Amino acid sequence: MSRTTAVSTDTDWLLCRGCRTPVYGKRLIRNHRVCPECGLHLPLTAEQRLGMLADDGRYEPLAVTVTSSDPLRFVDRVPYADRLADARARTGLNEAVLCARATVEGVPAIMAVMDFRFLGGSLGSAVGELITIAAETALAEHTPLIIVTASGGARMQEGALSLMQMAKTSAALGALDRAGVLTVSVITDPTYGGVAASFATLADVIVAEPGARLGFAGRRVIEQTIRQVLPEGFQTAEFLLARGMIDMIVERGRLRQELGRLLRAATFTGVRSAGPAPADPVVRDHRALPEPDPWRHVSQARDLTRPTTLDYLSLAFTDFQELHGDRISGDCPAVVGGTAWLDGRPVLVLGQQKGHDPAELMRRNFGMPVPAGYRKAARLMRLAEKLDLPIVTLVDTPGAYPGADAEEQGQAVAIAENLRLMAFLSVPVVTVIIGEGGSGGALGLAVANRVLMFSSSVYSVISPEGCAAIVWKDPAAAPRAAAALGLDARELLRLGVVDGVLVEPEGGTGADPLRAAELLGAALRASLHELGALAPDQLGADRRARFRQFGSAVTVEAELLTISGEVH
Image 1 (spheres, rainbow, N blue to C red):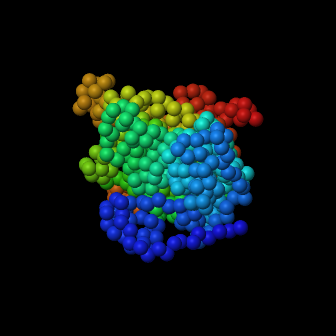
Image 2: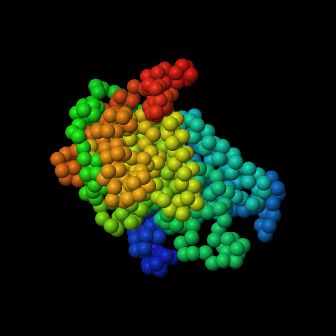
Image 3: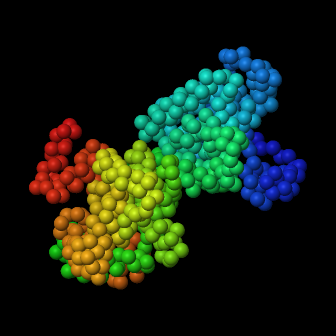
């Protein structure tokens, strides 16, 4: 039976605990219980949350009834059985999570929403069972799962049985991974302990409300244990976003819209290569390109007026939704990525980001990724494979960041793991070099089925300056090195390192960004249409065959036949 949430019309004046400003009750309700003065996100009940996220406030509770027992006959100041009875009477809920079917921006979803009022949203056997049933329902119906968390951690009154729920719920989310079903976690304040260390942080995409706290141990426990004062904002959403642990922070009023964007990209069912092949503006024969001045091309490739990855995302794609973080150590600003739409279908776009002015160049580390950037890219590529989204990578970097911190964090390992990962992805991958393609730092995003480049871009094993210093022992020999390295589009096309070249507008891509974006979009549509005819195992085989031929007498066709025979 469908249910619509009724919203209280309490008209009392309330004092915001954040800014201490009196707020009219009806105004607070209209604002989804967010203080209109300071933006503090006050708690919502599970029913209020479902009513806010579900289209028209309508949802259908899952037809399951699970209630907690008292396996240990636990008694502290009050018997556990009495605590349960009191929580049920106060909240009107059977347990600390409410599971339902709903549509979000028109897309069906299974939702599991926790309620902190019920024993602090603690994870007991019944909560774990309900989360698991929600995941199993999503699996059976191949429907995205959204979990909204609010919890102090595992329920101590159930002892080790509550601990076991962490493994149980984690396995349930793992089954959704294997089945290609999107999972989204919405972190609300607070989310701690066993919930944080299981299903809350295992979702494909982690969204947090502003100021929401997330962690395994709470601030007070940590400070008492290590006898240190923790920094301001520790464990808040803003703290975690900067450290790569969550994908985005979304204000409550925009949450349904942002979730809808994710769900639409994840549930697209169109055909990859439907309709006639689109026009392809790419030059495939190197003889059709003029003889270049390689050193001039180096200068043009580095021109700060050239469109960046973010520029192309706004000009050639629509509805880009950026996802952040490697879930390990950070969110490298030199690598951006997320879902976007191209020609009416969703894709996953990744690229290095430089900038157009000194301030942005500094903030983006001059487009030089650190290990967190490559690990973020790897995480998003795995997500694309899970959701069957084609991958587009836009390369523009002098190279991976050559710093001590990057080495300590495993720069070489991060790049190597991306090369291996990309070689076996079962979705189409197209790379376009839009500026500089510097060394392994570029290749870490460029193991693709089709590699294209703009005509004034460059792609090289080392910078001309670096080559001149090493080989000629003279930095002034950089122009000679540029010519010797064969880093220009014409030579790379002749060698087969790139599969095609996009001839830039007069004056370069910076002189006419709109035309450059049109060329990029058309080239991507043509390549993705061609690759859409290949089965998943053929896509990986095609990619490995493409790189197998370099330095070998083995042709792509021969290698494909060999690999195809092995596959089948």
